Amino acid sequence: MKKILVPTDFSKESEYALKVAAHLAKQFDSEIFLLHVLNLPLTTVDTMNTPSALPEAMFFMQLAHKKFKKMIRQPYLNGIKVHEKVKRHRIFDGINEACEENECDIIIMGSHGATGFKEMFVGSNAEKVVRTAKIPVMVIKRHHEEFNVNDFVFASDFKKDNIETYKKAVGLAKLLNSKMHLLIVDLPGKFDNHEQAKQRIKDFILGHEYDNYSINVIAANTVEKGILNFSREIDADLIGISTHGRQGISHFFNGSISEDIANHAKRPVVTFRIPDEVGVRS
Image (cartoon, rainbow, N blue to C red; front, side, top):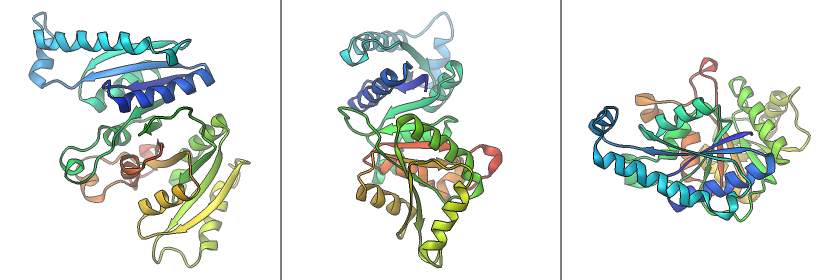
């Protein structure tokens, strides 16, 4: 975890994420790449790429850099190498582009989540980044005085296409010195008994064990409820889940558990992208 990307809109939620990133950066001697994306109308963006840039656009660029200067002076960033960048893009495109340019290892971003009509018509920037990012995305919802991950829930169906994301989750757990709680949510009629589900996890991790872990099965009507309920019961510090990054009409009709968890969970969530060639199921 040497390069951490932190998208910011200068909101309090963004600062929550930056403080978590700062804690990890000091722990692992990482650099932070602060990114502000100007989500301007297309006509404005086109004009900005010509010598006659719009005064309004230049104003927002200058304002962002002014806010960056104030942000970088915060005491919790002392001793950390911080880079700042303003991009003109759709938010999730700008974030993914910045990740590739700087070879970042993880995205840490703030979110207030979204529910009801707001979620249906506006959506959540965090949810869109989770859907499109190729590297792990950690979503932070509240202030953390310190960010210590003692208990890390990794929820999965523990089928073959999740093995790469499981390995990434294990790598993060080792880095953070966390206990992993491997979790299957048993939906009605899914397993004959919980021992069958536990055996699936045991078979899945064979050869990829991490010493500090527990195996868990919880019954629930939906996967999302099962993950959130279990995480609340053990007071988890972090929830990990895989995502296929489904987009477009497929995403609209089928939904994505990982995006719902990232949007609705009150505690931190980290998502791991399943390689596209592995499959297309969330």
